[in-house]
Amino acid sequence: MIIHSLSGIFDGYNFIQGPLSVEINDKIISNIIITDSTIGEINGKNQILSTPFNDAHTHLIFAGERYFELSKKLEGKSYSQILSEGGGIQYTVSQTRKASDAELLELVLNRLDTALSFGTLIVEAKSGYGLSFDEEIRLLKILEQANIQHPVEVVNTFCGAHVFPKEKSKTAYMDEILDDMIPFISKKSLATSTDVFCDVGAFSVDETRRILDKSLSLGLPVRVHGDEILYTGISQIAAKEYNALSVDHLLQATENDFTIISNTPTIVNFMPTAPFGLFVDTIPRDWNKTSVKIGLGSDFNPNNWTLSMQTVLRMAVFRYYLHPIQAFRAATSGSYQSITGNKMELLSIKSKATFVILNGKSLEEVISKLGQNLIADIYIEGKRIIWNK
Image (cartoon, rainbow, N blue to C red):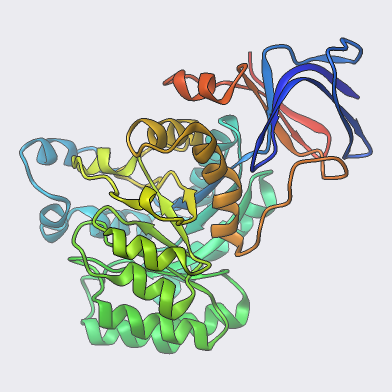
């Protein structure tokens, strides 16, 4: 199979200007030719062949909704205030605990369908709406089942340290995380990392350190929600002292934080759609004065219902001031390294023919078309799995 007349290829790191043709044989890209030839089965005129998007941060599994919080936000209440009044995460926990395994699995599969339709093929998915041993394990096992059933790869993160449950003391819940949850999850390989929400109303720096220490001692890499609502300094701590896979959000981080993180393997994950759901204007500052490595995530959750990495890409440019090539790298190879801890394979000759085709002649055009889904086709190992017109 040959796709001809393509405007270009984004290989996960760089954009190769067309016109060019891509030849696929036996699930592999067998040739890439810079040519204006129109010979081939598929016309790729005014289209870009790109490595698929990877969503580096989602809270994919939960039941219920919190649309009623919108009016509270419009009244000026902060996320922390809503959380303290029994809303926020605690409300979602109660709804999730009531849902059956079948209901939760269906919700997850439907959400993966949406992510796929926008060109995402790997999703990092956190637990965290169970807040007990039995419930957190249940959520991770349902995510495993979704990974088996769906073409989108689901990579589990244990996020039992999301907030403290209402029915237990902090001491009792910390003991449960440290003595029961993390050892069991590590032994059964139910997650590839541990995440801690370190912020006001959630876990302190000292509590976060104890959880990160325990996780690493059992061979489970770590990541953190860091410096999002209030500044704690946990982002640079997690990167410098714990070699965290990622530190995420960083709305309050300083240039010094980004400089320290840039000297570690840790990826900084930006979620540029998340502040909208919190009604805040804060964006990360001074990151572009450093060489920090960036990934992108949707932060899909009951406060932020987007699963479109195209939207995330665009907001990364228009709100966080990444250049288009930076945003594309962050949404593909940057996110991949954040999720897996490994560098992503270049989309090139001899690589698997797994890619998306975007309607557009340039990365700038894709970025500029706000609100549009520009996916034309998605291929996994040479097989077309979706076709939007």
